[in-house]
Length: 263
Image 1 (cartoon, rainbow, N blue to C red):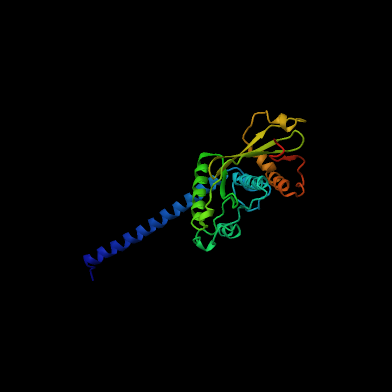
Image 2 (cartoon, helix red, strand yellow):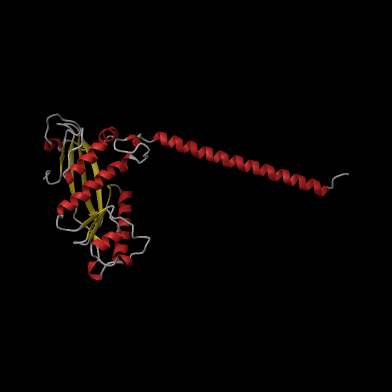
């Protein structure tokens, strides 16, 4: 029996669909392979920050975030030092807790999707809020937007006489000296606009037997990556111990000079 022309067309159509499906699958496999390859090459190009001291073995957090954590600890605790009689909430205190424990109003007025937001510094006596960010333009924009959102959410829930605003006038600096005349790290911060506090880490090279005051006339440089890798864990632990009155970390032979010491 001779196949009809309709059968021929149906057969060709089926073969075409199969071929198209095979090409589509091959294209997807190639795309996935390229994405994996690019990701792998990108990971190799990054500094080996995931091996920094003080991190979990499987952490992939960039080293900048590690120094950011130390900066947030120092700046938040310094604000408390400067305002000892105020009720000051630091991250991870969320908006619900701030409204409730700060006696600002009814936390149930907060929409559920914002109750867990966590401003960096909130002073419920002075009724001010600060968001802490690295001193760079993109981060400054991000801090401005976050502070605006936190204030809008809080002020929609608090009592009429307890509205909050962005804080101003908060600035300072502290130093970490590693050994006598060893590497000197500086953390400085400023509040150039309401609610946005910007911080910067800098570095002075070794100068044996020199005081910190003599060191401060040296040129300030960006922190070298090798310094961060070597001393990152000690820096955070030393700052925390200085503010909380704990023992200095093992291996830290230097000194922390808090803002009160640097005046």
